[in-house]
Image (cartoon, rainbow, N blue to C red; front, side, top):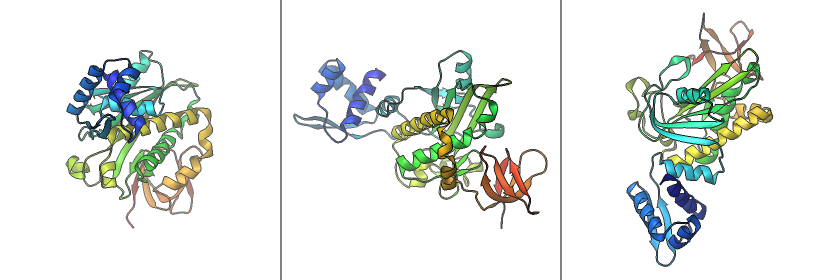
Length: 329
């Protein structure tokens, strides 16, 4: 009974450190006291710890450190997230699943989350490596019906919203590496973003924002080829992380960021947020994607999110896409 579990856990989240009466829970939720006791016992088996107080009720003192569906739903309800959020055990790719559901006519916006992916993909067709349960593999789907040229800053804006949400909730300041990577303070990558769209001649019909975020785990958990460059929020924090609460805050922030982007309010804070979280400003970089790579000093981004470089010849070069690598001094 996931819905009942979610309602029980929501009552504990709302109570904070105050005890919750089993009798009151039963009355409020319209079930028997025995049903409440049974669900608490089941939740205990799943890693929750409830402390009983005589004549006062129960306190929730510990939750699982993994992605738990009912607890995630309770946190989303606490944050008043109204969009549909579905958690799957295993999927080929959350982006692919979101695309299939949009094609089938599912109402948007919605989010698809997965415990694991078998064919997760990143930008430029790269594979997104899975580590262990608890990381976030998510895709948010929209039907924007906006002109294609208005979509250019979208990925950067969503990345900045992620940085703000993680700093507010986790007290960890990440950096955004143009165009789609989030970095820990030590420079290791903790997240990648991938935006895919179905575009007609005059309108973006369907839009999927994909996110792979390493929440837990240590560098040793990652495949050998990325062990020196990848990290997780938990490793960067140096302490444990409450996974469902963190994911709920991130999803709430991303849905709000979409609303601001669609309505145009994002422009008021885009520049200041970029200045706070940009990790490339003033650095010597090389940008390559097609043709000869371009080298230069990063001078920021323009209003559309393109990277501005000052080349060796003193020329100003605007780059709309590419793969950035730092040049050794």
